[in-house]
Length: 114
Length: 111
Image 1 (spheres, rainbow over the protein chains, first blue to last red):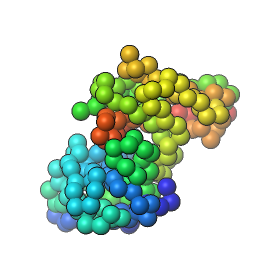
Image 2 (tube, each protein chain N blue to C red):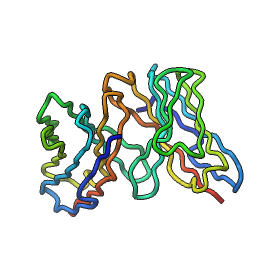
Image 3 (spheres, one colour):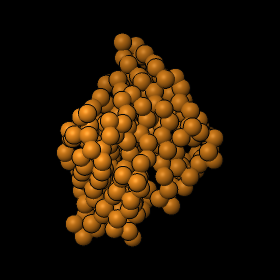
């Protein structure tokens, strides 16, 4: 768990702004994920990546974008097209996308629209 | 895609009693079922998991059972303690290991 670093922990976004959440892992994991959690709700998958330079949309990808230029990094951009972005964002990683290994989570980033 | 339903949404138990949370899944190809515990404002942490070739797994006061035929699995916490108070999430994957989560169960252990 300690090998996944998310920043910033708290972020405020003005209407119409894009913001980027950082996720770095030093676990040498191939797969990385972004989940969104609304207060009192479960986790919903935004995007995931099996390998460098490849990523796929999850269940709620609209209004979000990602990149995977390096194995250890998977930043998430919340664009102005995301109309209700206030939520807790969790980055996660797994050693292998196909082997059913444990998914570990970062500490999360709180995003609030002001 | 996989659909995971979790019940109950809230659970209040007396300290020392047992707590049981149940989940059902829809995709018969799912083969990995982890359980996560999330304390307020913190990240989910894996507490136990089970794979489809196993029917039951225990780790101290925590156990998970899996019924593949009925497509449901359950978390059992025995001798509950105040530190067990948290939100618990079940999840299920498919062969491509994209986890789908249940909506969560808020467990409160009363002293």
